[in-house]
Image (cartoon, rainbow, N blue to C red):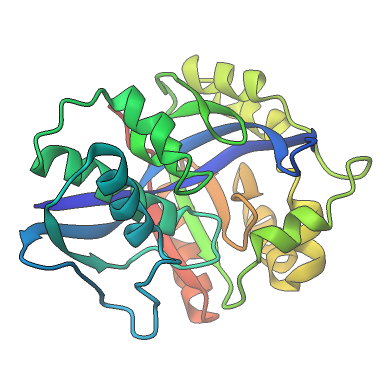
Length: 280
């Protein structure tokens, strides 16, 4: 069984504060995009986890292995699995590549083992694998709150193309959160962004989108600032960093602009992808 593990971007990300348990309270708009890893999962006589990326650890620290372990413990499974991940989503990019792989594995095991488990139950269970995994299990545009476990899907009626540009250096999510200065970082309104997406108000998106973690990431990876500046000056209507970085995304309805800047950014040695929101 082959499953698409879709990447995500954050069209808004507000870190509202730090909780007593050490986690941060979030209010975000997250959307799945048509950039994905391919996860092949089959029943086998023994567990085997492989990946096309040399050096990527497929051990207990990997979300794929965590997902299998959790599903086996909770649902008392004795089946073994061969899982191979074909990676297309870069690491430390703010695109939830690892989280999406774990989510795909949970959905795959649910189907392969014919588990009578509602998707909502799988969503709540998956937060034990990682903060972005519940959204990736749902894989629908949504308002995401709490530490990532409260998900309110909605329909997007606003069409645009997305250019992804990631510099070679990634950003540590833990480090980005540790450097937050709540008085200096952005605090966008997820409700305002949602309204623009639902009501096709593309021109208004630039005025309400934002990302609290840009404040930290700009200090950690200077290329993020450079990419944002270049894309904004090139004419993209919206340019923002996704998640904790280091990927920058730009939104436009101008195909010529999209294609021209994609080639220019590739020539600079950046990871580049042209994509759109996955709907339905």
